[in-house]
Structures are given as C-alpha cells and as structure tokens.
Amino acid sequence: MGKTKKLRYANRILSMFVVVFVVSAVAMIGTAAACHYDWGDAPDPYPTQGTEGANHGDGNYGRGYYLGYKWDHENDGQPDSEATGDDNSSIDDEDGVSFGPLTAGNQATVQVTVIAPLSKTGYLNAWIDFNADDDWEDTGEQIFTDVPLTPEHNELTFDVPQGATTGTTFARFRFCSQLNKCKSYRGNAPDGEVEDYQVNIENTEIPEFSTIAIPVAGILGLMFFFNNRKRRRD
Ligand SMILES: [Ca+2]
Ligand SMILES: [Ca+2]
Ligand SMILES: [Ca+2]
Ligand SMILES: [Ca+2]
Image (tube, rainbow, N blue to C red; front, side, top):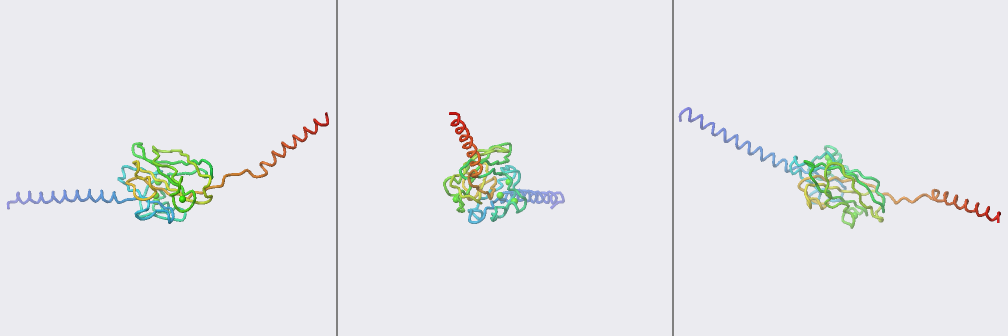
C-alpha cells in the first residue's frame, strides 16, 4: 500500500471514529436528559415514591414548565412529615405556591406562580386533603382540574368545605404542558413540576361574646332610657 493510500485509509478510520463518538455522545446526552425527574414530598401514605408517586420528567430542559422559578430533580420522592423533603434536597425549589388563610366554610385564595417557555399555556391540577384522612380521593378534594395558566403570577380561589377537618393537612400542586397529563395526583407526567405543601385549616371565626354583648347592651340601655323619659313626660 502506497503512502498516500495509507494516509487516506487512516483518515477514513479516524472519520468513522469521530462520527461514532459524536452519535454516541448525542445519544448519551439525550438519555441522561430523559432520566431526570422532579418528585413530591408529602408524607406516607400519600403517593410520593415509586411508580405511584407523582413525578415529572424534565422532557427537555428547554421546555421548562415549572411552578415558581426553580426546579431540581431527585431519584425518588422525598416523603417528609412536614412536606419539606424536596425543599431540603439539593435546592429549595418548592417555590410556586403561596396560600392565604384557609378557613372551613369560606373561600380561600392561593397565589400560583408558573414559568413556561415563550409564555405558553400550561395546566394546573391541585388537591387538598380536606378531611385529613391521608388521601386526596374524597369529593371536593381536587380543587383545580387542568386550569390553564400563563406565566407568571396567578391569583386563584377555591372553596374550603364547611365540614373540613381543622388543623394540619397536605396539598399537592402539579403543573405540566398538556391537558390530561398531570390530572391524577399519582404517577408520571412527561414534563412540569409537582410541589407538596403542609397547610393549616382554621375554624370559622365566631365573634367573641364581648364583641356582641357590649353593643347590644348599649342599644338596650339607650332604648330603656328613652322609653323611661317618654313615660315621665306622658
Ligand atoms: Ca418537587
Ligand atoms: Ca429540591
Ligand atoms: Ca418550583
Ligand atoms: Ca381525603
């Protein structure tokens, strides 16, 4: 084999190696990107880990449908008694939901911040375990169903049932790019994010006795005074 032929042959082999390397690298990057998932952190027995646990693939990082401004990934759900497992794992990325007071029998307000690429619409689903029986199955516990949201701040309202159990309970919020993809509080969604929160439901406020009794006593006193005066005149 002549020197020029050998050189051409070596170049061809080198080119093949380069092509194989580039294709493998691209495939590896694609596989790695598809393997990142965000999980929730509500405590057991809410479905937080394994195949039943709510999880959201990154789809690809460029799509970026997030609750709040931060997103990170874990290998599995991070159940925690106060739903702070994901907050404390890597970055504190559970930053999309802020509740107003939750009072049994009243309407409540929640601020939901979302991010989506090119201001596209994403879809919100959310649940609160109003009867505190460790599930989100009961009637009225899904407070939002595929509500379309655009970036960034959204003020939403929902009703807290009159019979809601007062005290601590848990909420799950899921946001993703397509209808029907995160409408269950369990399992996988191809993109987006899940955030779990511990919330507190308060009793309906009943005015204290003194705040009613003092004005009523005052009115009765005035009525008595004027009646008495009228009677004397007559
Ligand atoms: Ca999360
Ligand atoms: Ca985290
Ligand atoms: Ca977030
Ligand atoms: Ca429940």
